[in-house]
Length: 193
Image (cartoon, rainbow, N blue to C red; front, top):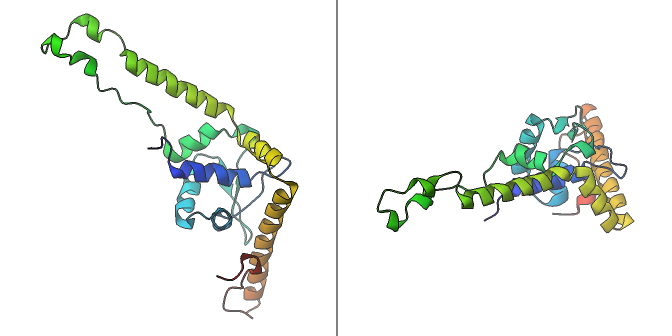
């Protein structure tokens, strides 16, 4: 069983797409981010509500509106995102079985229960190390790692795809405002469905 939910994975990937090649924030709607990655729109909308509440993203206004990063990409850690989406979690729940040894006959000696359980202490240390590692990795770090791995065409493709989506929304809004269309325009970049 995974420690963090799928929502954390979705949130991290989405915030990566809100970082441009220079590390600056770009805007995108939840629907566009869901479509881009093939994830459920309604679930992603709930994730963005949590990210906004944690002040990691802010909503933008207008027909092209959506979300953008609320602070620089080098100030948003992976741990920040995980905590915003899943909340504080404990990797281990100590059941204090150290006092249940049959040799104690129901009355564990003081030494057996003294201090923190060694197993619990080990698990707390492990979780602290994991959280420290996640707090040291920012969205900018991940975006740069992806940028080094992906071909230049991928970044250009993302930019073009997002621009086409924004232009389609703006065109649809203009046509609807003029009263000449009553149905949404089809985005030809999505192909036939």
